[in-house]
Length: 128
Length: 502
Image (tube, helix red, strand yellow):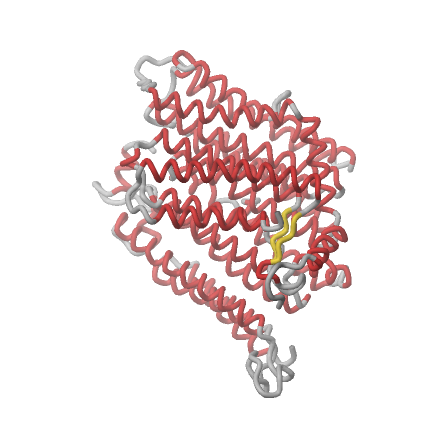
């Protein structure tokens, strides 16, 4: 568990950049922000395998498992990556849907009252 | 017998996949899904009796030994919640059958509901933190899909806050799993109990607990992390809103109960936080409800407010308070779902659920009015309905601990609850306005009859409160019995499964 400072720094930078991007108003930036956050979380899991320097991967080879990294986090991260991928796919489709519904690619078009004839304006007319 | 917990996860998944084989919604598919849910409700009810009489059931998946493999642990609380979740799903699906014609139903609705049930029940049954994460993701991905499945162009934007907050919570949850593994060296609940005891009082353990509390509070919809909820839920069709409102936030409360009741040792500081977060949640939720003018939106804010009562009780130490949470949880699942279904019927009959456009319901459908009144008074907590007993249990536990201020505020919140329920009563039922259309067809009678199922169940909880509170005390004792949980899981190692042992 020693000498993992660089992993911690990478996670912190990725997470911080991801949160920054997610707080912006453009759909594409939000999507990239989510991808960075989800990869930062995956790196946390990989990081807990321990320092890999000079150690073999977590498989049983000649010499047994004596000098290998902990294999369990690698099994966990596989699940996490697959789930993150599925969620990213859903998020892209949702953004596409919002683009189709609102004719815009940023949060401003979701909240602002649009020009006459748009969904937002009709909603205001209906008094909802 | 030992495989029983696995059935509640696998059967909904299998049924959902089978339903997807028929690309168009058909009557046969409806009957099949309805029959599966009814059978699972009965089976899980039987499982409750088994668990209460013979103790918790542990299933070691794949036959791996206790602290290493993934376990499903069904104790009394998990069994009760599995039963309630299947019952709620059955009611909501049947309501959907009456509400939508076969050819108008979205082809993916039923398969996704079954996937959602898989995730919910796996969250109730799992005995492993990472598996809990997977269960949450199964549940959340299905819920994202259901949320936007039938939404119109006007409302699709409300799905985004729901998605965003849950994405961040999921990323934090993966990180928290990693931290747990590096701190404790295990993700199994039973082994975590043993190792957190060794670390009790350690600063890192408190940090980990705080991180988990934030993650599960987002799922439960606690103050100040609830803003995504009241906007997102009303955009779905009524039966789906009822399913979400009845079950999803309750999964968050269950996990808080499991993690902070069973897995982590008692943390007084954390409990004080829960107490006051709960109190503020009650108030902000109910004030939001008072300010709304549409049935489904009022009820969505009430979800938040009711979660507050459960958090408040979670903040009180001792088995009495945990029993109160369990009783309140059971009451709330039934009452909340049925009120959303009432809202769906109002929208069906009047053509809208905005209170300015509703009315005449008491004149034309008195039985429907009684159903609403019973559930609304139960939600507000008037005797002899189920909500009264839940709130009495919470208030008693609070007064015994000397938390006068929090409990006093909670009772004040109940009065505001009653007020917003009266607003629905006056706007939709009592008001007579000849301009308001009332379209009361045979299908509307069916939707009312299905809602009545929930009323009967909730009344049963209310009138049989003595036996139900004994039941919840038994479940609470089991939740708080940490050495007992470890012993139960370890005892499963002695059961030899057929076939080759790993």
